[in-house]
Length: 231
Image (cartoon, rainbow, N blue to C red; front, side, top):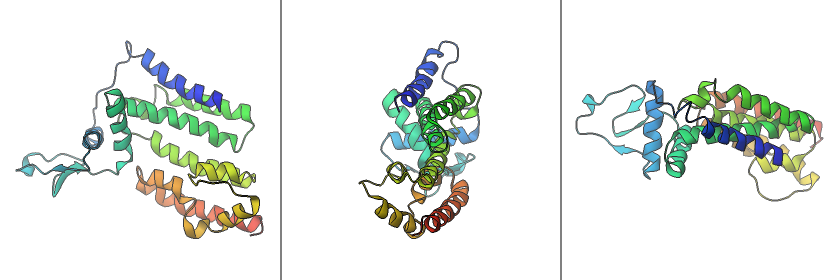
Protein backbone atom coordinates (compact mmCIF):
# COMPACT_ATOMS: atom_id res chain seq x y z
CA UNK A 1 0.00 0.00 0.00
CA UNK A 2 2.73 2.45 0.91
CA UNK A 3 4.44 2.08 -2.46
CA UNK A 4 1.14 2.55 -4.27
CA UNK A 5 0.41 5.75 -2.36
CA UNK A 6 3.92 7.06 -3.03
CA UNK A 7 3.46 6.38 -6.75
CA UNK A 8 0.11 8.22 -6.83
CA UNK A 9 1.56 11.13 -4.84
CA UNK A 10 4.55 11.28 -7.19
CA UNK A 11 2.13 11.84 -10.05
CA UNK A 12 0.75 14.93 -8.33
CA UNK A 13 4.15 16.24 -7.26
CA UNK A 14 5.53 15.70 -10.75
CA UNK A 15 2.72 17.68 -12.31
CA UNK A 16 3.25 20.56 -9.89
CA UNK A 17 6.98 20.54 -10.68
CA UNK A 18 6.24 20.84 -14.39
CA UNK A 19 4.04 23.92 -14.04
CA UNK A 20 6.81 26.34 -15.18
CA UNK A 21 7.17 24.33 -18.40
CA UNK A 22 3.62 23.02 -18.83
CA UNK A 23 1.14 25.45 -17.28
CA UNK A 24 -2.43 24.56 -16.44
CA UNK A 25 -4.16 23.80 -19.76
CA UNK A 26 -6.93 25.98 -21.13
CA UNK A 27 -10.18 24.38 -22.30
CA UNK A 28 -10.48 24.00 -26.06
CA UNK A 29 -13.49 21.87 -26.95
CA UNK A 30 -17.16 22.44 -26.22
CA UNK A 31 -17.27 19.33 -24.02
CA UNK A 32 -14.66 20.81 -21.71
CA UNK A 33 -16.60 24.03 -21.27
CA UNK A 34 -19.67 21.99 -20.38
CA UNK A 35 -17.77 20.05 -17.72
CA UNK A 36 -16.32 23.30 -16.35
CA UNK A 37 -19.80 24.79 -16.07
CA UNK A 38 -20.83 21.71 -14.12
CA UNK A 39 -17.78 22.04 -11.86
CA UNK A 40 -18.39 25.73 -11.16
CA UNK A 41 -22.05 25.06 -10.44
CA UNK A 42 -21.22 22.33 -7.90
CA UNK A 43 -18.38 24.37 -6.38
CA UNK A 44 -20.88 27.13 -5.60
CA UNK A 45 -23.23 24.71 -3.89
CA UNK A 46 -25.81 24.47 -6.66
CA UNK A 47 -27.09 21.56 -8.70
CA UNK A 48 -28.10 23.82 -11.61
CA UNK A 49 -28.27 27.50 -12.49
CA UNK A 50 -31.24 29.66 -13.28
CA UNK A 51 -32.09 29.85 -16.94
CA UNK A 52 -31.18 33.24 -18.50
CA UNK A 53 -33.98 35.58 -19.52
CA UNK A 54 -33.33 35.03 -23.22
CA UNK A 55 -31.85 31.53 -23.42
CA UNK A 56 -31.93 31.49 -27.22
CA UNK A 57 -28.96 33.88 -27.20
CA UNK A 58 -26.89 31.57 -24.98
CA UNK A 59 -27.26 28.32 -26.84
CA UNK A 60 -24.06 26.26 -26.95
CA UNK A 61 -23.18 22.61 -27.56
CA UNK A 62 -23.57 20.23 -24.62
CA UNK A 63 -25.46 22.72 -22.45
CA UNK A 64 -29.02 22.69 -21.16
CA UNK A 65 -30.74 26.09 -21.04
CA UNK A 66 -34.34 25.18 -20.22
CA UNK A 67 -35.71 24.78 -17.60
CA UNK A 68 -32.32 25.33 -15.95
CA UNK A 69 -28.86 26.31 -17.12
CA UNK A 70 -26.56 23.31 -16.64
CA UNK A 71 -24.25 20.81 -18.30
CA UNK A 72 -25.88 17.92 -20.14
CA UNK A 73 -23.31 15.45 -18.79
CA UNK A 74 -23.62 13.17 -15.73
CA UNK A 75 -22.17 14.66 -12.52
CA UNK A 76 -19.09 12.50 -11.90
CA UNK A 77 -16.47 14.50 -13.79
CA UNK A 78 -18.02 17.81 -12.78
CA UNK A 79 -17.86 16.84 -9.10
CA UNK A 80 -14.19 15.92 -9.41
CA UNK A 81 -13.40 19.23 -11.10
CA UNK A 82 -15.42 21.03 -8.43
CA UNK A 83 -13.26 19.34 -5.79
CA UNK A 84 -10.16 20.73 -7.47
CA UNK A 85 -11.70 24.19 -7.71
CA UNK A 86 -12.76 24.18 -4.07
CA UNK A 87 -9.62 22.72 -2.49
CA UNK A 88 -6.87 23.92 -4.82
CA UNK A 89 -8.35 26.96 -6.52
CA UNK A 90 -8.59 25.53 -10.05
CA UNK A 91 -10.64 22.71 -11.62
CA UNK A 92 -7.56 21.24 -13.28
CA UNK A 93 -6.31 19.89 -9.97
CA UNK A 94 -9.40 17.73 -9.90
CA UNK A 95 -8.11 16.20 -13.15
CA UNK A 96 -4.72 15.57 -11.52
CA UNK A 97 -6.31 14.09 -8.39
CA UNK A 98 -8.47 11.73 -10.44
CA UNK A 99 -5.38 10.63 -12.38
CA UNK A 100 -3.53 9.86 -9.14
CA UNK A 101 -6.53 7.96 -7.80
CA UNK A 102 -6.67 5.96 -11.04
CA UNK A 103 -3.01 4.92 -10.71
CA UNK A 104 -3.58 3.90 -7.08
CA UNK A 105 -6.60 1.78 -8.00
CA UNK A 106 -4.77 0.25 -10.96
CA UNK A 107 -2.15 -0.98 -8.48
CA UNK A 108 -4.86 -2.42 -6.25
CA UNK A 109 -6.59 -4.03 -9.23
CA UNK A 110 -3.34 -5.54 -10.55
CA UNK A 111 -2.58 -6.98 -7.10
CA UNK A 112 -5.75 -9.07 -7.41
CA UNK A 113 -4.34 -10.85 -10.45
CA UNK A 114 -0.54 -10.54 -10.24
CA UNK A 115 2.30 -10.80 -7.74
CA UNK A 116 2.73 -7.67 -5.55
CA UNK A 117 5.86 -6.47 -7.36
CA UNK A 118 4.12 -6.71 -10.72
CA UNK A 119 1.15 -4.78 -9.36
CA UNK A 120 3.48 -1.87 -8.65
CA UNK A 121 5.03 -2.20 -12.09
CA UNK A 122 1.57 -2.12 -13.65
CA UNK A 123 0.70 1.03 -11.72
CA UNK A 124 3.97 2.61 -12.78
CA UNK A 125 3.29 1.83 -16.43
CA UNK A 126 -0.16 3.41 -16.18
CA UNK A 127 1.39 6.50 -14.59
CA UNK A 128 3.84 6.82 -17.48
CA UNK A 129 1.22 6.24 -20.16
CA UNK A 130 -1.35 8.66 -18.76
CA UNK A 131 0.86 11.32 -17.15
CA UNK A 132 1.51 13.99 -19.78
CA UNK A 133 0.95 12.64 -23.31
CA UNK A 134 -2.66 11.56 -22.75
CA UNK A 135 -5.69 13.85 -22.99
CA UNK A 136 -7.12 12.32 -19.81
CA UNK A 137 -4.44 14.29 -17.98
CA UNK A 138 -4.17 17.38 -20.16
CA UNK A 139 -7.82 18.31 -20.67
CA UNK A 140 -11.09 18.56 -18.77
CA UNK A 141 -12.83 15.77 -20.68
CA UNK A 142 -12.06 13.20 -18.03
CA UNK A 143 -11.63 9.48 -18.38
CA UNK A 144 -9.58 8.78 -15.26
CA UNK A 145 -12.62 8.70 -13.00
CA UNK A 146 -14.42 6.23 -15.25
CA UNK A 147 -11.26 4.11 -15.26
CA UNK A 148 -11.40 4.13 -11.44
CA UNK A 149 -14.82 2.52 -11.59
CA UNK A 150 -13.55 -0.07 -14.03
CA UNK A 151 -10.56 -0.83 -11.78
CA UNK A 152 -12.91 -1.37 -8.82
CA UNK A 153 -14.98 -3.85 -10.80
CA UNK A 154 -12.06 -5.83 -12.25
CA UNK A 155 -10.09 -5.76 -9.01
CA UNK A 156 -13.03 -6.85 -6.86
CA UNK A 157 -13.78 -9.75 -9.17
CA UNK A 158 -10.12 -10.78 -9.02
CA UNK A 159 -10.14 -10.84 -5.23
CA UNK A 160 -13.39 -12.82 -5.24
CA UNK A 161 -11.89 -15.36 -7.63
CA UNK A 162 -8.88 -15.80 -5.33
CA UNK A 163 -11.15 -16.21 -2.32
CA UNK A 164 -10.02 -12.92 -0.76
CA UNK A 165 -13.56 -11.82 -0.06
CA UNK A 166 -12.50 -9.28 2.54
CA UNK A 167 -10.47 -7.21 0.08
CA UNK A 168 -13.20 -7.41 -2.52
CA UNK A 169 -15.89 -6.46 -0.04
CA UNK A 170 -13.92 -3.53 1.36
CA UNK A 171 -13.33 -2.03 -2.05
CA UNK A 172 -16.99 -2.40 -2.87
CA UNK A 173 -17.64 0.06 -0.03
CA UNK A 174 -19.54 -2.33 2.20
CA UNK A 175 -18.64 -1.97 5.88
CA UNK A 176 -18.06 -4.76 8.35
CA UNK A 177 -16.15 -8.04 8.47
CA UNK A 178 -17.64 -11.35 7.41
CA UNK A 179 -16.45 -14.91 7.60
CA UNK A 180 -16.16 -17.08 4.50
CA UNK A 181 -19.67 -18.51 4.78
CA UNK A 182 -21.20 -15.06 5.07
CA UNK A 183 -19.16 -13.88 2.11
CA UNK A 184 -20.45 -16.77 -0.02
CA UNK A 185 -23.97 -15.62 0.77
CA UNK A 186 -22.98 -12.08 -0.16
CA UNK A 187 -21.65 -13.18 -3.54
CA UNK A 188 -24.80 -15.20 -4.13
CA UNK A 189 -26.95 -12.17 -3.42
CA UNK A 190 -24.89 -9.94 -5.73
CA UNK A 191 -27.07 -10.67 -8.71
CA UNK A 192 -30.15 -9.36 -6.93
CA UNK A 193 -28.79 -6.76 -4.51
CA UNK A 194 -26.34 -5.12 -6.91
CA UNK A 195 -23.09 -5.64 -4.95
CA UNK A 196 -21.08 -5.55 -8.15
CA UNK A 197 -22.97 -2.50 -9.35
CA UNK A 198 -21.47 -0.20 -6.71
CA UNK A 199 -18.23 0.38 -8.60
CA UNK A 200 -20.24 0.27 -11.80
CA UNK A 201 -22.20 3.16 -10.33
CA UNK A 202 -18.95 5.12 -10.30
CA UNK A 203 -18.77 4.57 -14.04
CA UNK A 204 -22.46 5.36 -14.45
CA UNK A 205 -21.96 8.79 -12.88
CA UNK A 206 -19.46 9.59 -15.63
CA UNK A 207 -20.05 7.29 -18.63
CA UNK A 208 -23.59 5.82 -18.53
CA UNK A 209 -23.23 4.06 -21.89
CA UNK A 210 -20.09 2.26 -20.67
CA UNK A 211 -21.68 1.19 -17.40
CA UNK A 212 -24.61 -0.37 -19.25
CA UNK A 213 -22.19 -3.05 -20.44
CA UNK A 214 -20.18 -3.33 -17.23
CA UNK A 215 -23.02 -3.99 -14.80
CA UNK A 216 -24.61 -7.01 -16.56
CA UNK A 217 -21.21 -8.60 -17.20
CA UNK A 218 -20.02 -8.12 -13.62
CA UNK A 219 -23.26 -9.54 -12.25
CA UNK A 220 -22.96 -12.52 -14.58
CA UNK A 221 -19.44 -13.11 -13.33
CA UNK A 222 -20.64 -13.00 -9.71
CA UNK A 223 -23.31 -15.57 -10.58
CA UNK A 224 -20.63 -17.85 -12.03
CA UNK A 225 -18.47 -17.41 -8.89
CA UNK A 226 -21.47 -18.34 -6.73
CA UNK A 227 -21.78 -21.61 -8.66
CA UNK A 228 -18.03 -22.32 -8.46
CA UNK A 229 -17.84 -21.86 -4.69
CA UNK A 230 -20.92 -23.97 -4.23
CA UNK A 231 -23.42 -21.44 -2.88
